[in-house]
Image 1 (tube, rainbow, N blue to C red):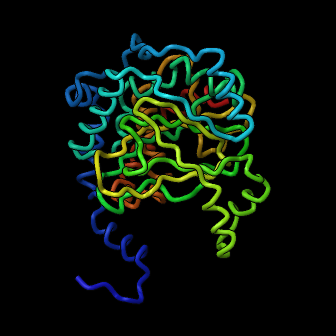
Image 2: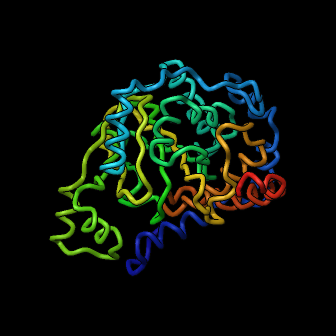
Image 3: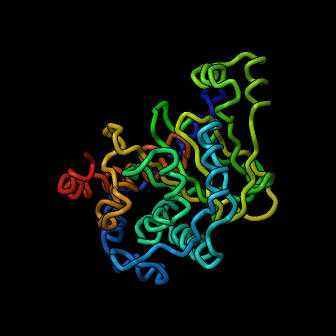
Length: 328
């Protein structure tokens, strides 16, 4: 099929993807499966759904010197990068879960139906670093995500962006495979690199050649081993680089956090207390649906699942109203 040369590539891609959207019948069939804990348990028996006895995997707390270094980097530069803290068995199981989800025809973010993708954020080193940046009593935002960058030439993570022009919020990112220069590791622009100037560049709709070169020169590549933890404040400019096509996919998972006293946007609700019971399946599905709808701007292939995402949000809305006190 020939494309009208006057049609912008992005617009043409959206038209093509619209033809691939899930039908109403497909959405209804997937909804029935998504609401069935037994389906998910049979799909990946190594993980549980709704088992309150699920405990976070083992990870040693950061030593005093490690914590001091990472907390100082977060305070002064707006991000931190810790070496691998997860055990290989945990990493392998989480990576295997995402691969199984994809093989079954679901977006990788559906790994968040499983308890283990929620308990992971209760690990001691993660709690230490989020508390360092936000203080005690912080909450999880309803924006879970899993990234999967295929090892093909030109595949990439998300383009340069900030997670939001909002204070008192942090994103924590865990690579489940080694994130390398070849498969698209994360780049950041540190907040101490003349932050006022970087803030100006961040808000630009277009940039001069000089501004673009300055932005590129300030970027820092952050290769990371599987099981590492990395984090940054929302206003830190970052992106996933382009893969060269060699090696393995870049698989990772991410969660966002908000300070206890900070008022959440409606699009961030419900908030989850990491020290209370795990969210029920309906709330997990709501968060998954919201993330699909929210992040399809970065991943056009998520457009196919937009209808399913909205349906999941409607299905989970009653559960969210029931737990409204969690979001206050």
